[in-house]
Image (cartoon, rainbow, N blue to C red):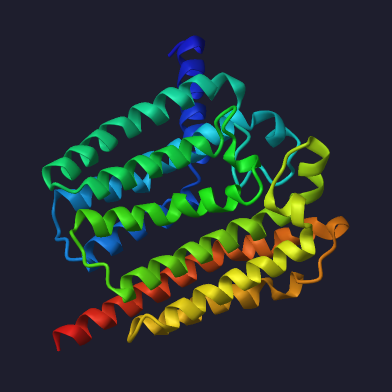
Length: 305
């Protein structure tokens, strides 16, 4: 093998690592799981819709969301000490064009397929939800739109990224919008808004220095943490109204509330300390997901019995 061939092979592997890293593998489950769980719980079966939707929200959706973000946020990422690990790569400029092309090419067939399914099932609501979901992913980071820099809208858009797959699962399955379903999705939205707001706290000083707006740069570290605490509390309260056994899931947002409570008096000058809570949040997601899965399994067996 020639030196040139070895170099091409190394470059190819480096490109794959950059693409995979840009898609945040640790977060893949956070969008695929809500779709799959909602679709099945709303009456969907083990069918092609489940497979197409789950695969889309597992990898292509995350590559589209985070990959485009890494391209458009390259300059700020260079100055962000958190980048380079589970919280995101610093995408080399030579892979920017490839990342955009691959993320769009990987997502497009799934979006078309899901749109076709929505039309075939005569579900205009599903089509609207799908379009809103994809728009929110692009608008969060896209030049000029930059929803991520619009305080308040940043948290709402981020929450849409994670809740819309679940809403799509319900609509594609033709599920009933009972209060239990509605309260659960509203709780999920409150949890997601709170999580985004808390995640922004650690970057207050860096964002202000770079002229970047966020909910945390406007409210400050202390008030943003307390707003996130209120969001988690609201999520727990909503779940408590959802009926048995869904109400048991209220313990999940309470765990997040307890996790960030030590940061409730954080000053703007101490904002970087919130990174400890954010890293704990990333792993708490896995524990919470496991607990929720076990609860769903138990509930399913109880319903059969």
